[in-house]
Amino acid sequence: MIRIKKHSVVSLFLIIYLFVCIFFPLDPYKLKIIILALMFCYSHKEYASFLSKMHYTSIFLIGCIYPCILFLLSFIRSRNISNSASQAYIPILLLIIVPVLYNDINFEKMISVILFVEAILVVSIIALDVLHIYDVNDSPIRKFYYDWGMGYMGKSHAYAAYYKVFFKTSPMLILLFDYAWRNKKIIICVITALAMLFSGTRANIIVLFGYIVFCSYFFGSNNQVKRLLIRIVFCVAIICLFRYLINSFESMMNSEGSVSSDKTRSGQMTGLIEALSNPVTFIFGDGFGSLFYDYGRNKYMSGVELSYINLLRQIGIILFIPFIVFVALPLFSRINKQTKVAYIGYMLIAWTNPLLFTSTAFLVYAYVYWLMYQSKIKMNNNAYFWRYISDIYNNA
Image (cartoon, rainbow, N blue to C red; front, side, top):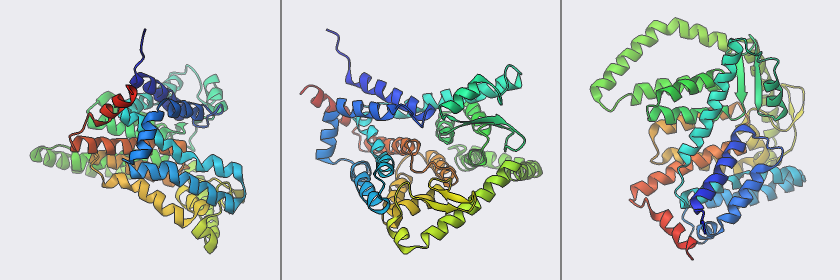
């Protein structure tokens, strides 16, 4: 009788889950919930051990307790059970790392492979247009892209980089770039950098260059002489290219689309500050799905791109602070310093995009927490601990 290893089954569930999250974040058929339910049921022994032994307090609090409090407070404030449930459940997605840790799955490699597929797709779409094989603005691919809510696609002088092939998960590409950069995978670095450039958003482009500049300057080499040489070359290059870089930056920031976006965000900020001037809203929030007046679009809105301030408006300072503590905790852990730079980059992108409290965001949080716990396991010389526990439950 053929016996399928639990590691393989959990890996399959995880691959499907990651594929849906990265390419179809709107998930019209609710596949993410179905896959998670199957994974939770299949890994019930691991979750039972997790809940009883409380190895990871932060995961337990954010993945189990926090969603319940979010739902109750949101429902009390908004009286909308549907919106409260659809948003408050999202932190539960963090719990996917429990079976990943127990079964010793390389989460970093798995998520990097799927993100690389996304990067290749972006570059391929641009290449096909450049070669006049098809038109980015008018093609079956573009129709499919929009029908499934995958992102935005087109070309226009109004865009920051002329082309815009923006997957809604493209900000996660900074994590792939960091993985390739740390492991000296040059081809992956180049393809990922091109994909981020042609995502067409200023935030992605600025964060990409910020990562390259910062990591080149501070982490260019472990050898002090080489590091000094890299810094000298880097400074000379900056001086020589200064005027070109400034002109490119000004062109990107002053494009028609950029100016329009900035004007809209300015109006949104005015409306959010107005809403938060109410002490009850500031302390307890207005609840998920609640509306405020968006002066940028001159109508009442719920979700906007200024995600930090809007989340504060929805959940209030009482629940906002523990969430920010949870988000910031990996920065004080022993994970790679360059990865911390990439993570900060993602959080900066989330400032002007609705990417702070979504399934995509919690995939990023799961990734950095997995790295954090992996570093703890290595530090304590207990690399086989979780597999040992898993084997006990499998053979019980």
